[in-house]
Length: 169
Image (cartoon, rainbow, N blue to C red; front, side):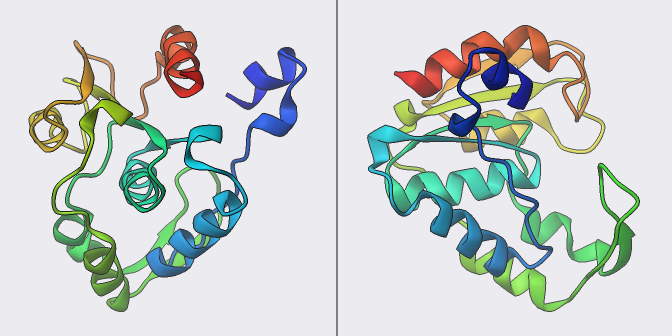
């Protein structure tokens, strides 16, 4: 996405900070970044746990959100991963603390409002999360069920124009 906006000559339209491991701190950072904008002036895009955070930001602000194989119930799913881990896209190490489960629970949106503000991409080949939970969680949202693919949506480039169009509506 960064390259996409750079090629359009609009690199300032794309923000993608490294979020801290603490869900509370991650949400606070994301909230601070969007705080100066009105809800119709930005959209959030998140993959996996980022999709969970994007949902929390969208519900808090009223903005649009694109969710790419989002974590639906991370407080449930991540409880088994307490301990030290390597970051997904680097060799950086971090410690997933037990307190983070409570922080995730505190950020959980039980029911989304205005599902028309959401665009969901759910891959049936996701090896980490269940695409059926995603579609049920985001009932009423625009949904793109991708046959096959994987958790990282390795074929994401073919959906980029649709993602940007949705965000710019």
